[in-house]
Each structure stands twice: as C-alpha cells, then as structure tokens.
Length: 369
Image (cartoon, rainbow, N blue to C red; front, side):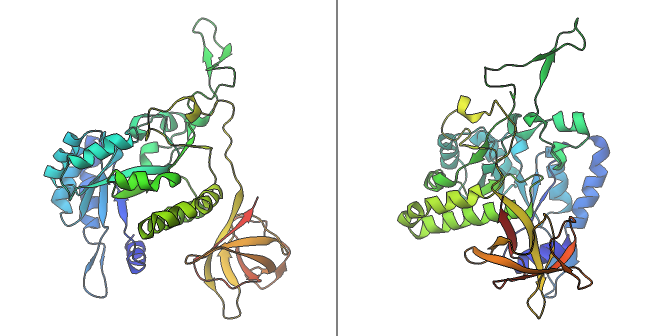
C-alpha cells in the first residue's frame, strides 16, 4: 500500500482507503491496529509520512477509532451511512468529517438543497456512473448469502442480475416464473447509471467529487470512464460550448466500456420502468481489454501481461494516458524466451508486442469486439 500511495502521489492523484464495513465487536481491535498502521506506512524521501489521503467510513464506532488512531488522515463518510439530509451532513461535519458521500437515492434538487444548508468546507461526493445496486445505499446481503463473497467488502457477484423463480411452500420443487410483466423475470436488474450528458447540472448542484462505481471492474473500465469524465469536466469549465460540442465523443468513449444500458437513476425523479431491464442480464461489450503496457524495451516492444487473446495482424486501439486514442496494427508477438507467436491465447501471459505506432508505459490496449 505504501508503494501504491507513493506512486499515486507522484502522479498527482489521491488515495482513499475504504474502511466502511459494518463492524462487530470482534472487528474493533483489528480496526484500531489497521488505522495505527495506516497513520504512517513509510517515510518518503523528503521525510514526510506516507499515508492515505482519506478513509471512507460508515460506522460511528469505526469513525471514533479513526479519529483516535489516525488523527492526521481525513475521514469521508460512506454512502452506506444513509446520507440523505443536511442534518446528517451537519452532524458528520461537527464530528470532524471532511466529505460525505450522498445516497444514490437523492435527486439533484435534493443535493442542491443540501449544498445550501451545510458548511462551505464540507464536500459532497456523489455517484455519477456505474452499476446501480438494488439495495438502499448499496447495503445488500444477497452476494454473501449465495456465494460467500461480501458486497460490503468489495467482492459483490451482482446476484441482483440473476433470474429468479417463486416456489409455493406446499409445492416444493415446483418453480413458478416471476413475471413482473410480459417481458421477462429479471426483477432486480437495474440499468447502469450514466451522467456524462449532465455535467452542467452536476456542477450547478454543488457536488465536489464524482464517484464511479467500479467493483470487480477492469483497469480499462476505470481508466476509460475516469478519463472521459475528467475531460468532460475540464471542457465544461473551459467553455460550456466546448463541452456541448464534444458530447458525442464522451458518449462514444463511455460506450467502449462494458455496460448494461444506461439510466439517470434518481437524479431527476424516482426511476420509472425504463430504469429496469426485464428480459436479460447481458452486458453491452463493444471493446475487449487486451492489457496495459508495463514497460517499453529499447528496441520498441511493448511489454504487457495479456488479458484477452489477440493475433498478429489485428488492428487495436492504444488508449494513451495523455492524449487521444490511436489505432495501430500488431506487427509481432514474442514470449519471454523471445519466440515468435501468432497469437497470445494464455491469460496473464507476459508478452512482448511490436506495434505500428509507438507506445508508452501505462498505455492500455483494447480491441473492437
């Protein structure tokens, strides 16, 4: 973690550590020890302590432990603390929180009212993109119950996207389909949130930080979504007209990520039927993630850990960490022993790739599906 934090800080980014579990008695001692460790993970070359920029917390007991054992780290209040009114925001501000993440069930009008009734130095963070949880503020037990993977620990398997049946207690084994209407049985299956077309409204509401839901997502998803929203925000503040002119570009970039149709969630009103998908649980996948460039050799080969198969002669897209995307052809693929390969069929294989365009460390490769 110390290495990751120093890496992020060297690139002008912040690191927040999630500590928003619903803690039981048995957890508290370990939580206190964890916060003491986080308060100084290492010492940087300039002598400053290496620590996260903030902790994300929902439980008041955990909050107290953070203030006691890691007093130099800011605390952000998780959406799972039910933050739906300005009284709650004021309370957490008095306790020492610097940011509160609003519940996804709030409208932009409600968030704007929050902003007008809380201290100016208290930041509002709001979800603006990604999977919508069927449970209020993301507090779901289905994943843990069915698979042992806890949504509250970042390992949600999205069981709300599965198909369900009813069984009458006197007719065991006789499964009845759940027809919410004649289009299907996916009664929990929400569309994904997307607010890329509403940056002006988000800014007007007084939101300070935009949150992208990214549990179980790839590096490509994180990079593409974050970069697109970053560019849209910067374009808007440079010129509202520039933002409007580039809307189609933002839509196209967002659509290159895996998604499940889009909705605006609760932002403009309570979701209607068009926020649900009733007939399938299929993602839209227009691009395939190939890998991230870990380094570039002196003779111009991109070194990467392969994520999906591609072949010599394929045309791929290089997603530049700085700048626009460019297309390039795969000219050659080698394994670690220097043997030429026609394709790379083995997941996570380390390979050396020569492309028809130059690449840099941390560029991502993707291919139209």
